[in-house]
Image (cartoon, rainbow, N blue to C red):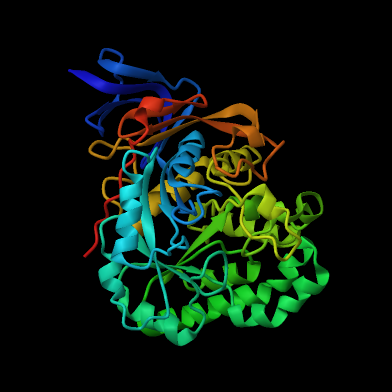
Length: 441
């Protein structure tokens, strides 16, 4: 038979380990692995000296649509994803209006049709409304689960009271994702940022205790309700120690931002590296890397959250928190792998295998026959210097501007279609992305 696609000569990361093998694809599915030198295909990708990974998924992005399309939108956000080797995203609910009901979710799903470069799902935003049937909402097609903001961030979604958090966790049966900062502590300390009026005060205002206190509160509620939680963008060594003791109920996300940047970058990049929770000191960062290597960390994300350069130029703390990241997430982690800080297997685990397992995504999570033909191909020896001008995000910048990283995504393949090859998009394939499907009861 003639296959739709054959990927040949690559080192493939399979569930059984690294293999020198070819991959055959037809009708968007992986058909077989093996020596396919005698077989034909409509398209052949030669992955000699490259690694073929199962399609990498970024489970935390903010694409700002609807309501703030001057910062970012769904089309540009998914374009940045595929340029960065990302085959799917989970998008956050703090848009305007927020994604808190069936109508808002369906509106986002409709907006994605014909525009999505990669696969996608959307979070439902938790609110203090105790009458809401959260389980009904989390089960909606295209929904990856509920997101709770225990600490204030961009947007107007905030669930700061323990009683309100508990009301959601009681009703939810899927894993609930949490932005864990103690809003009460941060309100008490806001004067520190206002009096300091420099972004270097951001991690002093939103201090470690605000994160640790919130996570301790969250775990206590999760134990009480029997809920499973996913703690987003963990930034402190202390939280990692706590979460290591609670892995039966909690999974852990870490961001490339917190693994690359430190508080010294406030002096050179200012508000460009202002985000929530904050970039912290290098001693703390070293502990975060230890947590990665100790398998306390489950998931790697970008928290892609653009604001315009004009908005970022506002005087701190009026400047908004957040930075772009979906296009640079994979390169940043590949660079860390080249520096010996983690392994390629850990990347696959944290952006594919565990993503599929934690959220029960249908037909994702491995390179093996019958699974969807989503692949990220990377060249670990290639280097690239990242520039604002090449960023797909509407705001047009990156905190990685001018940085040279070793390890480059060369191909993004979704449903057997080569969307990106060597930094070039196949414009005819815009709209290839589809909503993830989940195996849930």
